[in-house]
Structures are given as C-alpha cells and as structure tokens.
Length: 282
Image (tube, rainbow, N blue to C red):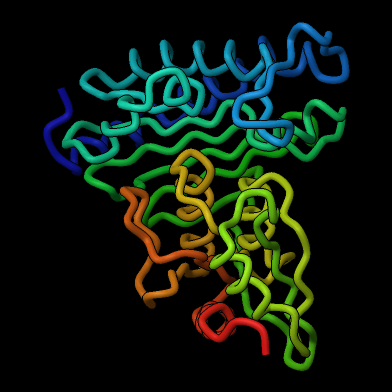
C-alpha cells in the first residue's frame, strides 16, 4: 500500500517504464486494430451525437484498469467509461488513495472519422495533485511524459512552452459550443477580439501537448472532467506553462472551478485570456 508521496516518487522512478508499456500495449491491442476499421455496431452514443464511445474505448480502458491497478497496489482507477457506467466512481479523485485517471481514447470523434488527432491519456494523482502523466498519440507515434518537478518530455526531448511572439495574434483553442452553457458561451465570446485567433478545439490532450510544445498559445475550456485535463495540465505546467480559472486560481481536478478556464504558455498569456473571458464580448 502506498503511504506517502515519497513512496510514489520511488514508484515512478522504478516503474514509469512499465506504465509507458501499459499505455502502448493498450493502444496496440485495442485501439489501433480498430482505427479506420470500426464497424457500425462498435460505435455508440452516450449523451448525444457529439459524445461517442467505441469498443476501442471500452476495451482499452479495461486493460489499463487491470494493468495499472496491479502495478501500484492500493491505487484506484477512475476511467471515463467506468464513470459513465457508475458516476459514483468519480468520487475516488477526492480520496486519499493514489488514483489513475484514464481517458482511453481522447478525441473519439476524430478516431471514429479516421483522423489521427486522438490520444490515450493517463495521469497519476493523489489528494488532488497530479504527480505524473502520459499522453500517447498512437497514430502519430508520439508519447509525452511529465513527472511533477522533473519536466515534460516528448519522445525523450524536453518540452519548453516558451512565450508567444510579441505582436502576433494569440491562438486559443476553445470548447465546442455544444458543451457550453449560455453563460460560458458569453464568456468565450470575449476571445473574439483584436489580437486573438480563437478556434474550436480537437482532442483536449493533444491541445495541451500543443501548448507544452509552444505550438498553441492557450486553451479556453468549459468542462471539468478530470480524464480530459489531468494529464495535459501537468504536461503544460512542467513545460513552463500555467493554468487559471475565472476566479484567478489554478484549476483543481477535484472540481468546483470557476469556468471557463485557461491553460497557457506563460502567466501573462493566461491572465490576458482570463481577463477577456471575464469581460465577455465588447
């Protein structure tokens, strides 16, 4: 049983490669064989036509749940599909046990359309603090790993988010309108102004990776599901980025955030985006 953060640090030093292998194996065994080969009966809707789930999601999550739980005795797994089946499962994020937060296929719509913009997200957290994360885009052959206090890496190369170039429009990936309340839509309209180039987001995990790589200046997201954010938040942080909610506080994976929130390449950009969100349309 894991009893303290130091022990988790030791676990990560000793078994991080095993976690990486588990993520790669889940994708190789359950996701990629179905990529561009999905049959109609392997695709279902959850909340609506923009909220899809496939056999690849379910089977990859099942594999990761069994494998990750065995790697770290005393840990629990919170996966997107398990929470859909039993919402009470999500409460484990609030507990004392180490928790694996899993999104087996982030960007399911892209996966279903046969596009490469999807990834598998795994984060290890405890008491609301994300300690390590893995972002794997199997169709692109990319694996990003972050460990708190030890940096963020893409395929072994350290990531540095840097800062936006002066005088250039800020590129910001925003929530899909179908997933926003009227109040959030009004806030997001604040980004439609001079000096900002907003666009609809794709896979949240890959948008966070783009921030960490310095290819995207910021995100503006309006939902709290930890499996979409936990891995990417740490990745961006360890690359030098930051995240802020409308209240000016960092985003909490345990919930209760003031939304929308931003993750940005640097603090100045985050504060500018939050200011525009608070202001709303001019």
